[in-house]
Length: 420
Image (cartoon, rainbow, N blue to C red; front, top):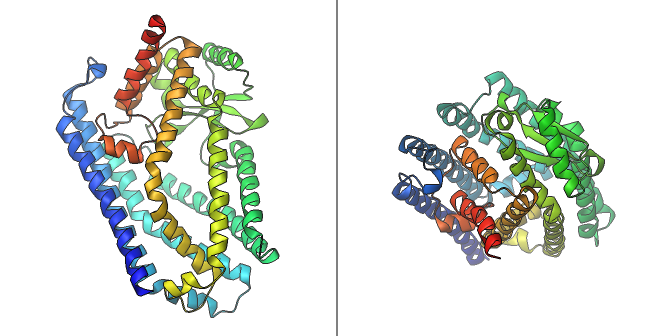
């Protein structure tokens, strides 16, 4: 058993070292090519801005690596250093009910993780984001957001934990199926209420006042038969100068949300192109296919979890003195992170394909390639995005095609149509 445990430890360390190596390769690739203004950005970007992009990416990456190393050390010490066994035995010594023991087991770990992340969050927000002109969060607002997030996560996690543990007790043989069904229904419920019960806790939403823009958006959604209840503006600039737009809600709660920074920085053609891209995801049923794939893998994962926690294999392998399902589920989540890592390139390749399809729909709806190109250039400049990511880094981590590749692909639409 000890040999298997050592192999698992080595597998985890190898995964982490591989990720650090790929991150280093990505930074080196950016430094090698990042000082050259690409043709797509000529006239709108200079070497000074490229240098700023490189510096921002480098600082974010360094902080991310430091946080990752710290987190990895904590995990190794906790799982392989005997702390998990001590923690599990300590909670078991109180002889609490099954549900309450499980709730404490997971909630204490969640709070510990949240507390350990605070220094990195503060440094990212008030140092890095501040230095590059993105941060607009005051200390008071940061504290308010942190407290609200903590309370919200406590409520939601408590509901999920108590419900899942009740189902495990109620149906020891089929809990994996009932937990899966409950999580699926709960996620749909959250998607439905989020626009009205959760999102307003953190941001103020007001109707978009630009009537011409609203008319153009209405015509755009009518083309594909989408009924949007409201077109809203979010006060994102209270926290950051980063920009975005998104659809939220389902059914009658579905609405379009535009960052106020987006409305300030982009013209109507660019905004319409960005929204047409989001509509492309809806038209191509990307949300449904992604949700279906996620639910299938979740069901398989829960069934495998059920099979693996039936006996005491995991407790024996990781030297857990008191055999509890809570400790075994935590070990499984750790092992899942190792096993699933090789799947990341395949998953992100699938998502990047969806993004290209959505770009194609955007062009079909607007008959305009330059609106989207101009929007992508502004988004890249405004967010100080890395224009030269390494292909291996893209394969593993990018959910969107790199911006230069994406721009060239979009500009090819009109040329291919002309030839066809």
